[in-house]
Length: 171
Figure 1 (cartoon, one colour):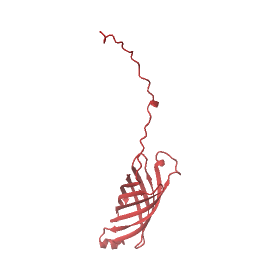
Figure 2 (figure 1 turned 135 degrees about the vertical axis):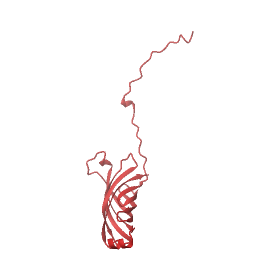
Figure 3 (figure 1 turned 90 degrees about the vertical axis):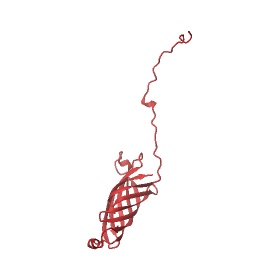
Figure 4 (figure 1 turned 30 degrees about the horizontal axis):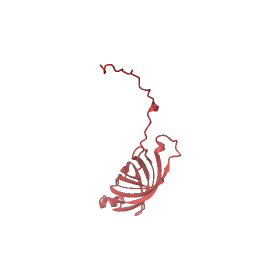
């Protein structure tokens, strides 16, 4: 009858597919607030925070435990520099260098006899100057850093040395 009499259309192959058919969709990283928090290992070992003031300056700070049996609290002002002097590749293009100046205080956890023997005070104030670098690719909210530098205890005028590596989460 009528349904059997319908003509069937011949099958045609689909149009050819090429890489040009598919367009890459960019997923831009949402801008963060310039605030970050993370962990640091070294001298001291603890929690680190950073707040970007603009593309060339930032504040950072932290609290941690020192190998000299003390809690250390610090804050620094950072000047940031691009890695333009280096040969650019996937790693160095996401690297920033910085120098900083700041200070903090140290609370000794040693007993009085050990503090006297080591020449430490219960509470020490220090200034410090640091140098470091942070690697932060734009497609991730994580930045890895390495920093080191000297410090001077203001009560007793003794030298200190800080070195730490860590990672921060930007939000």
